[in-house]
Image (cartoon, rainbow, N blue to C red; front, top):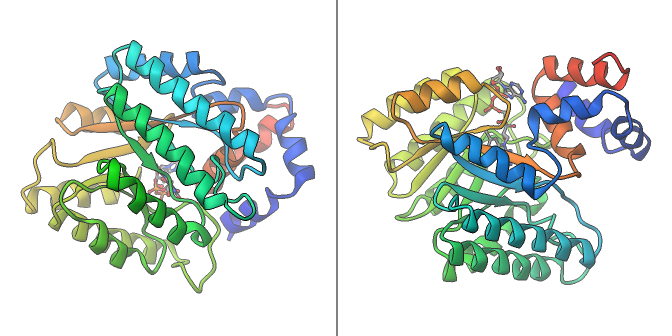
Length: 309
Ligand SMILES: Cc1cc2nc3c(=O)[nH]c(=O)nc-3n(C[C@H](O)[C@H](O)[C@H](O)COP(=O)(O)OP(=O)(O)OC[C@H]3O[C@@H](n4cnc5c(N)ncnc54)[C@H](O)[C@@H]3O)c2cc1C
């Protein structure tokens, strides 16, 4: 309930203004994001890769309302990918893209604008030797995002999908997407969704996660197991063994700054671990979702806003 309330209240422009200008907020942001510039993103990527992790980079931004911003974000990804290539990091680092950041919600031809921009990002990713994963946003965009995914996969079959276990539809989507070569990230889901489309109770979401994971692991695709939940990680490790999964045919994923010790533990036992690293100045929506996931983070946020961080 607290999570839903925080996600709703955070959309208020006055609250956003207050939060983004609060004195102690930048220290909190640096716990969860690499920094504001491409240079910062490359620096953190270098560091993680040298520690044996793989990386997916998210140029922060969402719900873009004009074409120029969509193009600016697309170009930021292009620049990032070219720099990853030059720094010899492309084999270890890919990018995660929110279609709403590159224009999906623009009036009239938004989905086409987003698809065209994503196409350009995929081209550059392929040229430098890496991949793109399409983040999943709220449920009103699921069909549009899967349709863009299908279009992109015609030319770039390694484009990754994200499915959210809290949605009722996801087990069926896992069946559709769990085919050979299909990279699918399974997460719980981070948005405030109504009862009509999503499980509301934590236990129901966790059970759905396990059902979806079984479908993906039984299938022929490449599951990307995105969770920090110790119980689900233990279940995933057991299921990988049961379905004969090898260390190179699936991976674990976690967010930058969250459960670092667990990230190291998994890497040390030979699991492939990819860290999701956000960077950029538009960190508000991302940070709110991280605070909504965990009351302790919310307290950190409140203290930062009151200047007691
Ligand atoms: C790599 C990756 C990519 C993602 N991409 C998407 C996406 O495209 N779309 C989407 O809707 N969601 C995405 N998510 C977010 C996801 O849906 C969940 O909201 C988030 O991962 C929290 O769920 P959990 O599985 O970690 O379990 P939870 O039950 O929320 O957490 C389990 C435990 O992990 C720790 N933990 C979890 N979150 C935090 C945090 N923020 N700070 C500190 N500790 C924490 C706590 O110890 C907690 O008890 C992504 C998550 C990851 C890891």
